[in-house]
Length: 395
Ligand SMILES: *Cc1c(COP(=O)(O)O)cnc(C)c1O
Image (cartoon, rainbow, N blue to C red):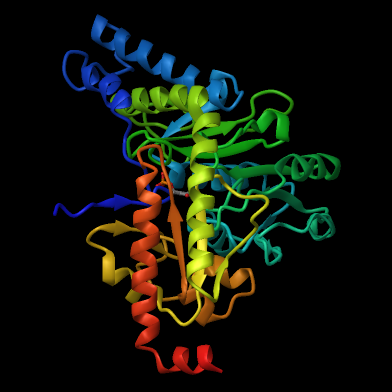
């Protein structure tokens, strides 16, 4: 019998949509131009292609094309936003507010700025992962220049109330940055409507290629100025020098157009499958819990805790044919428990017992039952070998 291979780690990265690849291919071959070459048709074609992609990405998030800066991914976009902003606005104050549940791209960038004289406040989050708006308001000081709060969390999928956060920041006169890498293309994201002044996203989390992302930077009411973090030919209006990744950008644009057209239906489908998986696992495996908010959550993602199970050992049982993550892929190189789950108040043991399962466009309904069967068998196998679990379930 042929062994199925099921990929349920779409929050780490998504496969590229074949329709996206089709749009990219000509820019490797017949149209190899540099978008900055002004003296021949190859350059003009590349420039046109980038222009179209910029429109597609801008349209997905309700922005204007001037507000889109193409980067090598969300990590670079986050660095450009936070460091570039800090360097421009530090004369007004050096205080930044963020969450302990942010992606490392944000946390490590803030850490770097602390070495350069920034003061960073890490707000608490509730057991559901949500920010406490009153605590946010109370933590804003006269020298606060920036609030950095992610749109949706990459480990637990919690979606923050961005419009409320935006309104609060507006009242208090501070700027707002959001890492929306997990949200863009999955749920409606409109920074201008939400009062978000800078926003990062990435193509490879939304069925586009790896190595390309974008930073949205508000260019009217207010105009945000950023210090470039990379100098060179003055590309991207001087905000990010370097030859543009034309095929990647074309792919990002195509992925954005598909997401805009299809995300609503797709979200409905993936929510059904995610919910079905959770219902089955909760029914078949006692002492299983969902981590994070079940109400304000990305459609495709589930973070589950299996008491008495070590996730790393669990995954070893089936990692040849079912791909899921222990906690977050971005922290799984280290053996520390997930900083996100810890921030929710989970113990180390609870954090180590947790896995992230994330559906995507190319899953099938049959993957739900396959994942259920595989997980149930593996969890039961590990629990059967654990004396502590035996004692607990008998007691
Ligand atoms: C994946 C991810 C990033 C990093 O994006 P890259 O494009 O891989 O650099 C940043 N933030 C969040 C929330 C992510 O999920």
